[in-house]
Image (cartoon, rainbow, N blue to C red; front, side, top):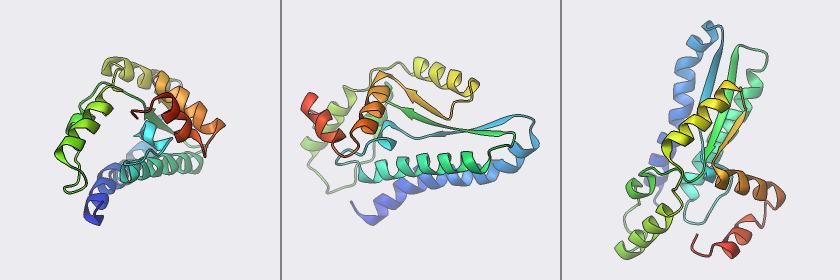
Length: 171
């Protein structure tokens, strides 16, 4: 992946979160009760091949959120990080793939493979997130896939990807 493409992704996924947090933090401090909700990803829990920039940016959101939560402990501001699994959105269909990294056929095959994992209705994902925020959860895992993979990653952090591909080779 070219540096410019990596930087573009990081600007959106990580620096956007940091900049919005900085912009809204004074307003949140003035509130009686506030919560910062940052969207990571299942790929902020595991790092599959071919997703280096995306995973790195989502791991960065996770680390930023976790650290910020400790820094704001005892204040009126909670911090929640959300890790959605396969929510039925257009993310795979609309993902920007850097030119020259794969053939058009390979790109289409990967998009189709990714789409088959996007099964959770967005409305259900939204309900899960809202319930987690209302409960002041530090981490919200959205979907059974996110819960299973989170558990597996904690159980076998080094070999998690090898185990996952054994059960689902098309990943």
